[in-house]
Image (cartoon, rainbow, N blue to C red):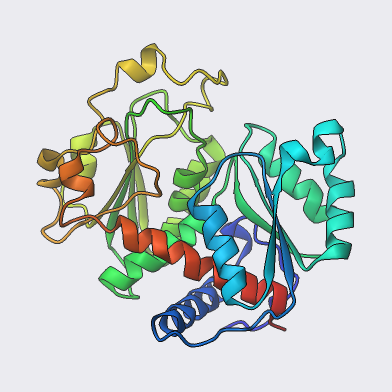
Length: 328
């Protein structure tokens, strides 16, 4: 177990060791038990976290705001369209000033080829920890909540658990690749056998695939890619059918195109879930594009763990803040 976290940035779990992630999970479980027992968890009294949002949010904003309140601190919600960023203030200046006024800066910036770079620029200048609330490449808060939920349902030893990260059709907006990227990088580090499934054209970056294979080889898991969704569902213990945009092959912001329309059949159905293991889990970061991504019978059915997964966003967010803003 690692115990020194104060000031550590949380931009990608690739920069956190397994010992550090295990400590993060241990603290998440402890905070969740305290929440269940209504015990006070005032680990961050009078501490302030700034929440900078370049996009809309439901689970991320509320898990962070509720989380810091339950830790005894306070959140400042910052809509970046109403900040001086809109007039050209650079990430460095924002990071330096907010560091002097509070104890952490959390930021969501998912603009392609901009978001992660923006967080990195802030991290280079900040004297307070930078917490990613999602960028164009990574979503560590979602990935750690996903892993916690899998462990709750299937035990802390996840070696050789079969988990499939599957592209699904949607029409709402062109979504970032950060959720599947974070999942395929993290899960193999816990010995999980990961299948990444998508129609051709929805590739993740080559370096992500190479790193996922490296993580699997190093930690006893496996990683493979298929373009056959039935193969991905077959005998899977956990499935994550979720849409992501084809940013790697097409940087247009158009939501629907010929490639997307040609793959409407990539949808999580009861028939596909019947191919999975007997007690399999259906999981989704939410919001789900109901009807298009998944049938109601699945997302509201006995396999679904989406609400436990969403609640765990609260407890893992609290753990991240408690360790990086307080701790030692």
